[in-house]
Amino acid sequence: GIGGPAWSEATVGSEAMGEIRRGAAVGEVLIAPFDADGRFVAPSMRARAVAFDARALPRVPVVIGVAEGPGKVVPILGALRGGLLNTLVTDVGTAEAVLAAADQAAA
Image 1: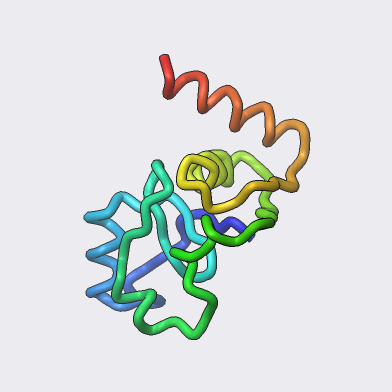
Image 2: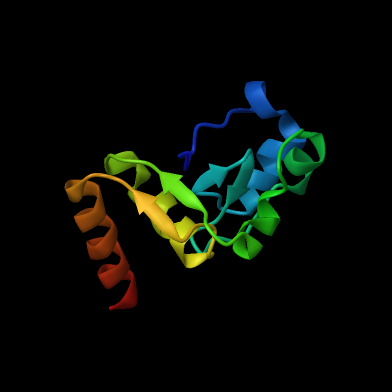
């Protein structure tokens, strides 16, 4: 799954929340927040997580991301920009919104 920004200091702690804010995180995969270009931020969260290291995703041959809806457009685009997935499962409306957002960013 590609998560949207749903962090709070109560859930991740003040150190991680500061890193998330400074890093301008837009989404997360495998409990690893990333920015609009797919760069991982908030290393303190990664250090606390017991999960596959999301930094290795670009080396995995097939990575399928699943997300849909208006709130996931920016996180999907960031994940695609960062090479965090190579297959996306979504609905037509979300796919069109991602393409529009990419076109708008390129303009």
